[in-house]
Length: 222
Image 1 (cartoon, rainbow, N blue to C red):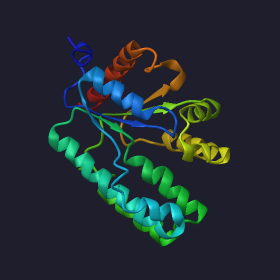
Image 2: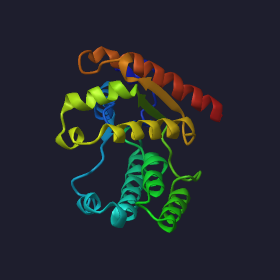
Image 3: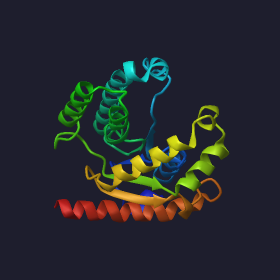
Image 4: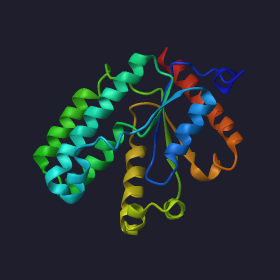
């Protein structure tokens, strides 16, 4: 009996992983997919036609980039549910509007007109009863110090050159976002409570908690 069957997790469940840079979203995505026998859905960065332009000129391209992300994530969400579920998603569609588009607007790198257009489109596409929301969003959280240590440890050049103040701001924005998030049930996991790299067995207690959350959610919907 695999872990999905052991804990009674529906084979058509869709679970989304969220959290700031450095919390281990990809590791969690792969660990859960292996443990449950689910497929994975990762963000496609290489095919993004706006990314280079955006990094060279935030103000000119932030709106285009966010619209592109919205379209791609919307299509991916539809694909997952049309396939019949059984997926773990690395990053959610909700973070774009709740964190990144808002940040650009507040910092002046997205105009008010563009921001209002983007959020109106997002609400019309995503925040409706017809949009297939995940069964569960897993939010990976940790202290700012722990997250910065992890970013330093994995050593990606672009991240190493990023000022600490940026990570501080992103950490706070993520906390503000998740505290008001209500599009689907949320399971919060502290990154210090497990180690999927050193201990593969630490995925099972997480799957047990996922099972409980999904079951409680489905009971409330009845």
